Length: 394
Ligand SMILES: Cc1cc2nc3c(=O)[nH]c(=O)nc-3n(C[C@H](O)[C@H](O)[C@H](O)COP(=O)(O)OP(=O)(O)OC[C@H]3O[C@@H](n4cnc5c(N)ncnc54)[C@H](O)[C@@H]3O)c2cc1C
Image 1 (cartoon, rainbow, N blue to C red):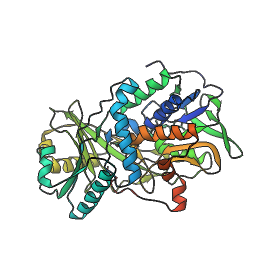
Image 2: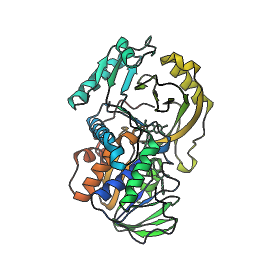
Image 3: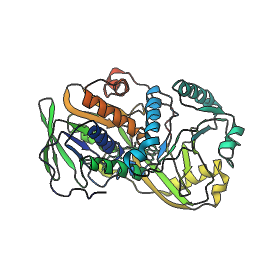
Image 4: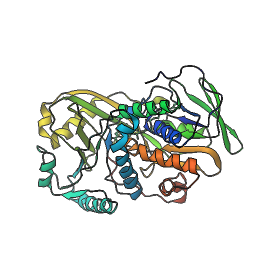
């Protein structure tokens, strides 16, 4: 990678993007592809230091709302070509996602979701417990009541995707400043005119908020109140083992997810209903807890007994940026010019990023409305036009 600039920021830019995670870098790349010239990305720490570098790298199309399915489906197509497009190995592997449940009451939901996904041309199949063994041998199906499987789902390595986008941005002249914090936003009337950063001021007509779990704090600087709350989630990686697990296994009963990386490690996490929301981003607690290790190990062994012999190598935590309907917030704000959001992804911003960014860049540069972005606007909460996705796991 070309060394990142370390001097002062430029006096002006056509667009300033806050956040050096997957969404900030992807939208910078997509804008530059569409001819926007002077683009600056500001990252207060290092690239991938937010949720992106802490995530499980899972990419699935098995959702219960059409907007999520369509964005994920387009993103899978983008991920299939991303390594060659960006010129960097992304370790994208389509081992499928096996979504299981131990709960009879979930079966109808799984069937309905598979039918909706099929209508959107996603090749999801509904499986009986015994059929899961063809996909994940050694899975303990004693409690499993049913499952769905989509062979086109998969995983990628988050840091490679971040570095791939960053390098592709640099080749196109995008200026990426790390260790550079946005402090304030300048407004004239109802229009963004610039930003103040820890390395100086930049005049700009366009500010894009890709600040992940810090998006709410940033939005407040332009007087916008986001309904997002920030939730802590832990995840772990085991020692490397011989390849034995193709799909990501995910349980909609207890929220565990686990997959095997190309290096043989099991990577997985489990949601914790007792995790509180965090009001103060400067106090996000990303330390590891024994409670997670115990809960995860028990749940993993429940589905995959041979894991009993494996050693956990490392665990860490990150923040989800969660909206009331667990779907992202994309687009601008009525009455405020020059300000856009790409945030609120809960546990699925890595998988949706390529197409959320491409659609946003297309809308911004063409001025044409986008049907999916319109359905994911901030205004939906005020209008009561909220459709929650039921398959939020982790
Ligand atoms: C444990 C865990 C597991 C997950 N697993 C998955 C998964 O399997 N699949 C999936 O799709 N998603 C997953 N996610 C969710 C996913 O990680 C996020 O939705 C996604 O990475 C969000 O990317 P982003 O670029 O929008 O935000 P981030 O990656 O958080 O980037 C935002 C960046 O903005 C920077 N920033 C904030 N404020 C400022 C400021 N004032 N000035 C300058 N810079 C600033 C931050 O430092 C940060 O680097 C997981 C998340 C966690 C925590």
